[in-house]
Amino acid sequence: MSEDSLFTKIINREIPADIVYEDDQCICIKDINPQAPTHVLVIPAKPIAKLADASDEDKALLGHLMLKVGEIARTLGVEDAFRVVVNNGAGAGQQVFHLHLHILANKSFDEGSLGMR
Ligand code: AMP
Image 1 (tube, protein in one colour):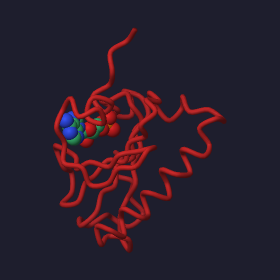
Image 2 (cartoon, helix red, strand yellow; image 1 turned 135 degrees about the vertical axis):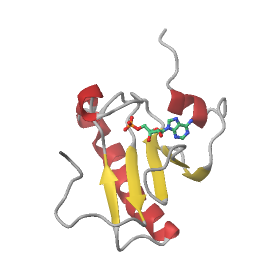
Image 3 (tube, protein in one colour; image 1 turned 90 degrees about the horizontal axis):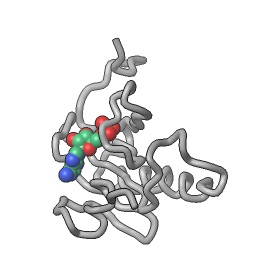
Image 4 (cartoon, protein in one colour; image 1 turned 60 degrees about the horizontal axis):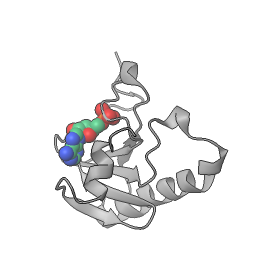
């Protein structure tokens, strides 16, 4: 059996994290290496390795995650200006192979820019 992912270990309280929100389907934690003054990760309990691995059976879960992004953004007071990032695959910068949505806020985003070079 393959080893649990870092985020599964956080959900199982085997590794500590600063938890912002949790329900039976997902957890939201502060990023340990924030790239913006507000930087949290919304992570499904189901260990889908990357977005492209999600399937039709994950439709409700993916909807749940997106709704939680908005709800958490409101809780954090950043609902008017935040960016959601999902890195899919090592070539796109994914480091932890357990699906997660980055919420970044309280920094200036170049208008129309996706931060790519
Ligand atoms: P990605 O590059 O999209 O896979 O993002 C992984 C994110 O997880 C990075 O922004 C890391 O800073 C973050 N990260 C890694 N380890 C931890 C941890 N123990 N607690 C919180 N965030 C973490």
